[in-house]
Length: 251
Length: 267
Image (cartoon, rainbow over all chains, first blue to last red; front, side, top):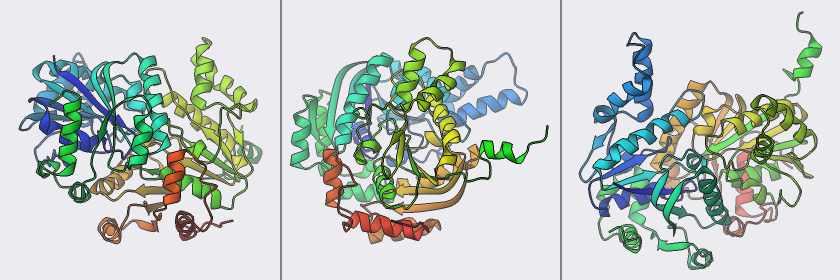
């Protein structure tokens, strides 16, 4: 069974950067799952889904619905049609990792159904990988949907504010009520932390793994939308992520 | 029976509807900071603030402790009502009663505040958001201006809590992702049919001149940037009210400038 890793946190904290850099150090093959409708982890890794002819989960779902409406057999459920799309259309296969992307929805309503499909897809695919790494959307709602119900390592990326302290408590309350199990609950500091704020979070009694170092180059790459795969191995951000993963026993 | 003027007045259509302004953006950009300073400097009486973020941080930034004030969030109220085994169809009425009892609406000197709050049960925020939508429909005629602080990301837009927006402010951080975020907001609002009069961009405290030129090729209306302000950072780290930082602080001055740019009358 694959090790299930989830990266979450408040918006803009650096969840996706963490996942993008983490993918280098994990034992391959890893399946990366981008749960954020607003951001493409693939973009950050320099993968252009459109150019590669790949589709998001939401797009495949739209296709499945459309196919059925346009004269496909009414006996085949949408879910089965959708399943047919996943391997060929949605899964991008890269070096050392594959990626699935949720995508953006432009119909009224929530992401419960796409998330539900993704949950099933993940459990079907996970046996083929050593790790499944989920990059979450900002905020808390995805937790209510219990997409991965048994998490091995949960990483909460924090920004230096009082809201992060509250955020940790809220995550725990939701996981408990929703019935998500986790083996490890780790907190890490983002690049904006100074020593004083680090101290505050060290004193919370949470399993604090350290800080993702500020990295001028990384900031530039994110601004220009360049692939983080190109970031040099000895850059401060890479080194700090590696150190964090070592502490978590993942390297 | 034809619809008469009195019916229209009853429903609030066309008459003194509070102008709904929505602040949105990617996570951590400064939506709530902007909302809090917006609330502080706008001249509007009465003013209603809505915190749509389950992380519910706006209250604190306004210096309000809801629990101490004996108020609860919409999610808490919903949980209480549902927890008593009531049927879903009765929920709106029960919530309305809670509202009338004054359990949800917090009243301050400058503003009133309603908070969505955190949901602990499995599933999505459709029901709490639906309740908020209903509440807003009932209440907005009592206000001159309504300001809605959104959760990070896009999903709240799919739920169309505010179908008719006056000013939609998007607070941006300096990254390529912000440019894509703008496109996605437009994609979702178009698909879901959310109407807005004005679409404004606001740069956050991390903007530089270089980023401004880079991001503003979009052709959208850009109002300026929220200045970097150590006092805001400190305030947010400590969880203190943004109503306490000096009026002459860089963040205050820049937000006032942005609001004037959008045509608001300030205090």
